[in-house]
Length: 131
View 1 (cartoon, one colour):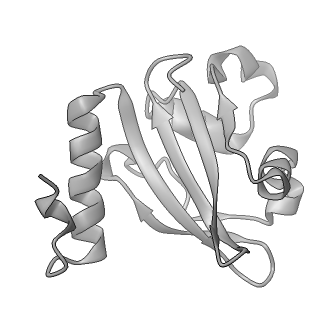
View 2 (view 1 turned 120 degrees about the horizontal axis):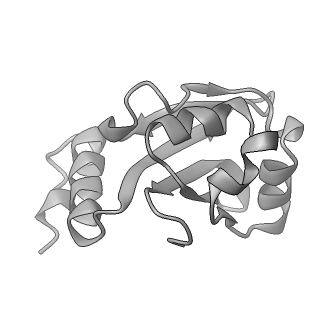
C-alpha cells in the first residue's frame, strides 16, 4: 500500500509520490512544502511540490517578523487560513504569490524533533475552509 515509502527512493521522490497520493484522495490540495530553519530564524525550502511553480518562496525572512508564524512556533499548534481572499487588502507578498497558484486556504504546521523547532510544513488547497 505504501510502496512509495520504499527506502531505495530519494526523499524528494518519496515526497513527490506522497503529494501525488494526497492529491489523488483530495484533488483540492494544491501543494505541500517543507522548510527548515537556520540559526537566524530564516526559513529555507527543503521541498516544494511542483504545482506551486515559482510561487512558493525558497526563502522566508525571520519568522519573528511574522506574528502568525511566531505564534504557531510557540503554541506548537497548526495555523490555518480558511480564506486568503478575505484578507486581500492586508495580504502579504507571499500570500499573493500563493493566490497566483490558486491557493485559497492554507495550513501551516511546526516541525519539531526532540523538542527542537526545525522547520514548517505548509499545505495549501484551492478551496476555502478546506482545513
